[in-house]
Image 1 (cartoon, rainbow, N blue to C red):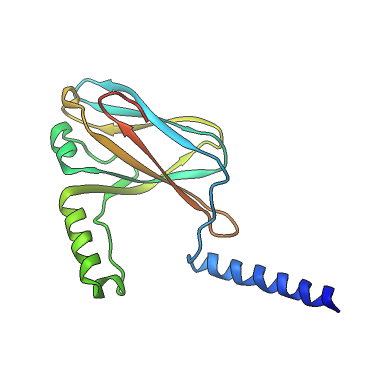
Image 2 (cartoon, one colour):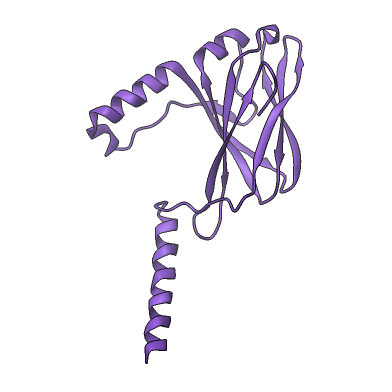
Length: 167
């Protein structure tokens, strides 16, 4: 009898987790798979080329965030497949003055490009960011990757320092 009760409880927990993940209410860890990036090269007054290495598991680069000062220095444009979007607020978040203030300041001081750049499961890919003044390369870019899975997926981040090319 105890076995049946335990089995039913396990099934119920699995059903609840699946429903919560589909609703976007839980996030599952990446299981150690890391994505890293570095400046591969600067094409003089044309582009910043970022080399992105994926250590495994199918995922995509979905967001690039950086200070507006970097945009002004490099005169950059979003890479192919990306567009500028302000950080959004949900209806619930709009009721919280602290959250509204944070998002307004974030959007004033940062640029957020949103898109979909699929990464190879293992290996590297190059992301070309058009830039008209590469001699002024400084600052850092923050990249967001997302991986989908049956239990919701995972979100991970990595930074690229434009001066040194380090991640």
